[in-house]
Picture 1: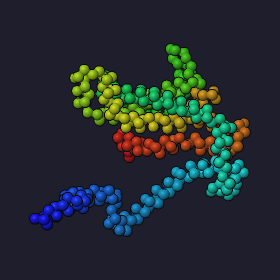
Picture 2: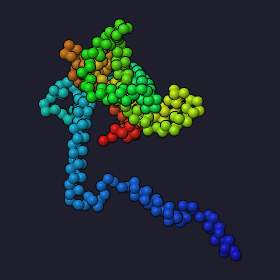
Picture 3: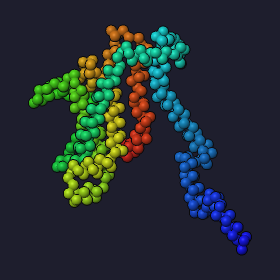
Picture 4: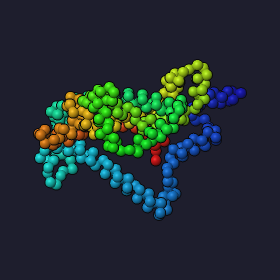
Length: 327
């Protein structure tokens, strides 16, 4: 009897982790670990000569394309650290012999980049607000409200994607310089950059394809409860569409940041110019700026998009998969 009580006490003090795991749970754990370690090509397949050659050929192509893609970026950042004489040195140096980190601060101060960075941030913020609001409401109307002629409107959006932007550049400039009926000029104003891109057909079609996947049972139930179309949009559709809205926001910021041709035509006043337009004017011969300062300014201009992708790469990849844009 005492031995039985002693054994029961030892059993109660035993570590739970040392208890035997049921066979079903152990098998599920092993299968999940195997699934995590599973690759696209199994090790057994790689032992064959044919698949192994294809695998290494693809790997070499990926490494080569990575070097080709990152090579100019590396050359830009390394060139920003060189002196003017070292930039023109033959053969060129792979890395700066005497790195001049002051080139970045001098470029920021001498070229007045703080003004153009601020202008570009304002342009990006306005473009995000306008494009997200207009694109989301237009996509919601085409997807859930289904107005008369909605298919024709959607077909028109598809057609605009097939036309190069340069083709309607001059008519767009004429309209912005003298808005019909109002006779107001948006020249040298940020609104002249925002308004032509407000109804972005690419964003509208992305959002519409996502809104089509939202079950109509949710919207119909809310409508039976007395919710208006606007209430359904703000309370149901928008909260469910946060991933794709985040992707549209990031795409809009990047597109505005690198936009050059249209702001070059509209923003002639240096006080309202974007960063890309200002860098174009500052690299002219009459600017008399050292070439290493120009390269350093280009490196500074490329930092925000790179940081944006590094912080939101999961949202971008998830949103691309949600919108069906992957290959």
